[in-house]
Length: 353
Image (cartoon, rainbow, N blue to C red; front, side, top):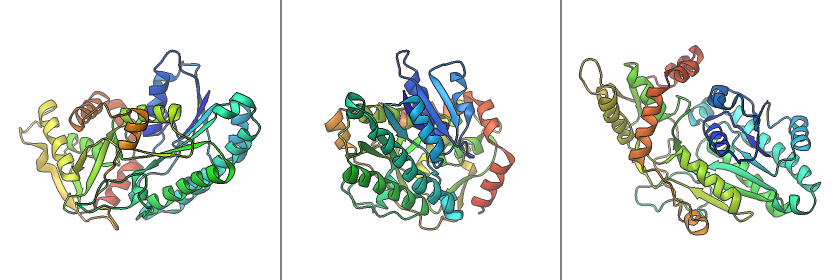
């Protein structure tokens, strides 16, 4: 068994589905709090798979986490559980502090106690894989080299500050207690099951519904885009072969300005599902007030994981974004299930012109 936390969210669910796609895969205990972005529909295909055990709960619940560890005896923990939306962290940082910092601390302590009771090979092979973000490194100028694992931490939002703190806790538990950890810091993910408050799914769904396509500021904020399936394969490699105590940056080698991403989506939709009036979806692009402290550029140097573990992304941005748009076109029932009244109220509040 492995224990996956946050396995009903976007990246976590993709990881669980990818892991169990192999008929010989170990089972997964999936612990998720099911906040607004956690969605059991993501895991619907596993309903009859006895290898998948879903548990509704919080990584901050020490009694529950300890019980799961004692009962299922996992050989690894993969920690996806986190509040992850920058805009939400600006409006309400408390949840981010509680989940990303206090929750990670609790998970580490429960796991350390469990690991301390293991013997022999089981203790030697145990791993705690902490999944984090490139946003902990701060912002880059246009001419700066991409983030490497040795960049200093300079988080600029409540979200990235809380993730930076969790990374430091994981590092400290390795150096202080010898607890067997690995950390990965990924760039912006996209792909199936992405909750539609983030740029790519938001643009796809707003375009199809004839709504404005909100672009912050001048739209020239640059991000490195990583297809979620590639991220999952990287995590598997690091979990299997990563060196204890090490950090690995996971990126897609795809730096794109936000406005270019939006225009690319519009062109694909123009081809796959043209507007009834024959016009381009790009006419729906609407520039809105920039968010506070908006980092200008993120870029990941993923050469360390390539040299050390032989991993490179399989998807280019062009192939990955086309797969993503097609998935949303093919899954209207999933979309209808997540787009609730409260979600629409959030979008209306966040993206006022």
